Amino acid sequence: MNKLRWQILIVVLALVAIAILLLGQQPILRAFVAEPAVGGIYIEGLVGNLNRLNPLLDYANPADQDIDRLIFSGLVRFDDRGNPIPDLAQEWGVSIDGLSYNFTLRSDALWHDGEPVTSADFVFTTTLLRHADMPVPEDIRALWETVDVIAFDATHLQFNLPEPFAPFMDYLTFGVLPEHLLGERHPLELVNAPFNLAPVGTGPYRFEEVIAENEQITGVVLNAFEAYYNDRPFIDQIIFRFYQSSGEAYQAYLQGDVLGISQVSPELLPTVLEDRTLNLYSARLPKLSIILLNLNNTLVPFFGELEVRQALMHGINRQWLVDAYLDGQAIVADGPILPGTWAYNENMVSIPFDTDQAIRFLKDAGYTVPAEGGGVRSRDGISLSFELVHPDTEVHTLMAQSIQSDWAKLGISIRLLAVDYETLVADYLEPRNYQAVLVDLNLARSPDPDPYPFWHQAEASGGQNYSRWDDRRASEYLEQARVSISQSQRERLYRNFQTHFNREIPALPLFYPIYNYAVSAQVQGVQMAPLFQSSDRLASVTQWFLVARSNLEEAPAVISTAGSTP
Image 1 (cartoon, rainbow, N blue to C red):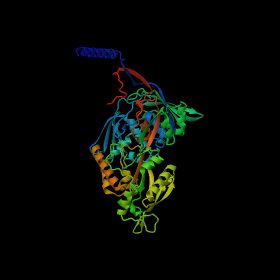
Image 2 (cartoon, rainbow, N blue to C red):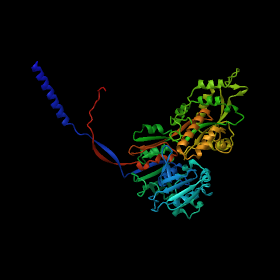
Image 3 (tube, rainbow, N blue to C red):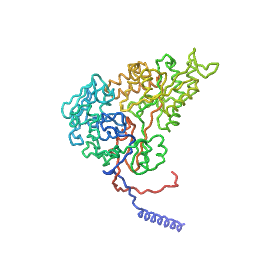
Image 4 (tube, rainbow, N blue to C red):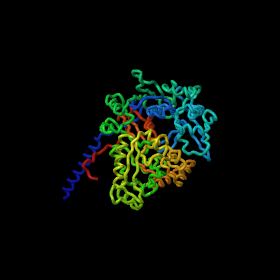
């Protein structure tokens, strides 16, 4: 017995010795941690054409906006939740009555020609924004016509409003223009000034040159601005090359001419998803596809009945619209405020597609299918039948036909009318000459949600409240949120508004479309948050990098546990 114990002890000691020997021979595993370094050239295939590189003249051209985003900057910018953060402004304050906004400019901000940025530049730019000869959107001009701008000194600036207007910060993101270069020019001269093809801004990249072939501008070259007031970009040079379609930009990528595709179209999306050399970035666009109901049209009095609106909402298979016609590239909408923002109510009840529930709502309201057939529900001689106007595009037509089929299952008959978008707005929306209409509301450049224009009572006749929703409670929420300087109070008011909207269903929200952007896997640090305009995809461009240095770090040895059980 003692002899056996000695043998066991010898074996154990031998195993321990072997284990120690093997452990000592384990290689020390080291991890290479890549850190961004300065250098490299990023070339992007930009879908579109160059028009003018001037932030006051780029409202109608997304390609210009993308480039201007890197050349120019404003007082403030917005984070991905729609909160204002400093840009050229170092700090700001708002008076208790909400009428005065006081700003202090950064003392280290320079124009690309080396001149300092001063309050005079902002006074000059706002003067242009209100000038009748500048082709800026009417709502922007109208606002600046009411605002007094005062420069106290080179770095202190004040904006005075005639009445409280909490969304005012939205209007302070405009790209500022250099007074010392353009101050002597009349606004009409600025529209076609040489400056628009050789701009001087304050952003992270400065204009270098345009690329022209056969007397056509085919690209723009930007260089990192060494004296940029924030962190200097890692990528030394960004080149935009213009293409007429996503497909052309992708072919340029395959040929090695570009490293990114500014917008991936639905047709190109399957191909890009299969290309392992590309990273796809997706984000919610600032748009809402919605069916507006004319709530004050005597030809369709049943739209005034909550049960009918509930039935219409439950009767649409919105997820099918997204999957079948948008390849899944949209988010089903439950309300009028963009998801992911500070004002969005994440606790709203999502209305499901439920044909049986929709029919129960109609029955509760007293509607029946006529005995003689026809499939149209009626009550007291009133038939649930109306016209749905929609944009004359292939996708909108397919979606309208799908909605028509969904509602037919409820015994509701609709007639479809396809018109071009210009006609839809001018002949149907603005004169309120419609029964129901499928539209895409553009909420771009509005990080502050401010649903007032679309849903307040005062906008029902001549504004953008095309549904003519006349609801006092909703209007009070919107009125108070517009004048309060308290973010927490505004958040509460907007959440209450969304809950009320969700309960009353004055219109039928469908979905928020998604934007897709493709960049070579060689480019690191790319991020894309929800968009308030398409150029927001470049918001993090100063953090992108193509060159990396490696820091050698010791890491614990990794022992494989393959096949083991936890």
